[in-house]
Length: 261
Image 1 (cartoon, rainbow, N blue to C red):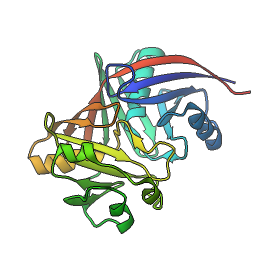
Image 2: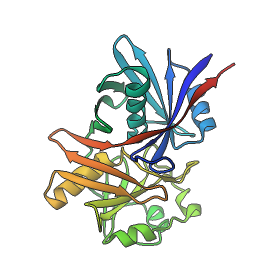
Image 3: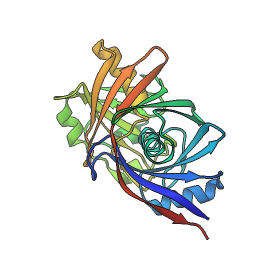
Image 4: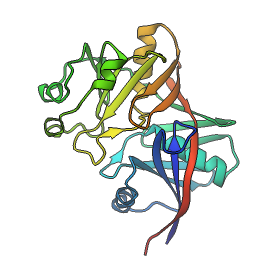
């Protein structure tokens, strides 16, 4: 069996930046174990698997370790691939375990309509607090723990003690650290314990919570976000009544075929 495979860099317009995602176009679903093995072999933060049934696209996401409930950058990559290589359509509806996800392509900008996950004030496990070198000013929780800091510099200076961090399992979530940005509305970084890839380069799904959080704090519905990983990425964000819109660019890095014997 041969699978069309694409490697796309999401939330950027330059290769070697943003968040890399694999996209596999399947004629039918493979067993979850095989899809996880493919994702592990790809060695990217996430791989999206897409199946078209009649006129509907279905999507699943796998890290090298587990299936995810939602993934922004791999969905953006999948929309890019469908539009550029499969169907010349500018509106794509993906069916997923997180519900219906809409992608709209306008020139080179891809906008994703994702569920809004408004976080609530919370306390964090001591082990999680001990795993970072700077203590947060505020703590929130949705799927992920969200640590709010006082400055962008603190976000850049965050260090994670891996030995401590890996003592907790937050599947399918992680730890998001965030603050107001110096040259954007807000900035963030994202870490996953017990994961092959500790720091995610650009995390679309975490913005399902970051957008309503910062929208409420700043009193505005349209925001620009930057993720401060080594690769970096830019997200154009909007809070709607019942969902969020996360927009960005994508570029193709390579195209090929996966051979399953």
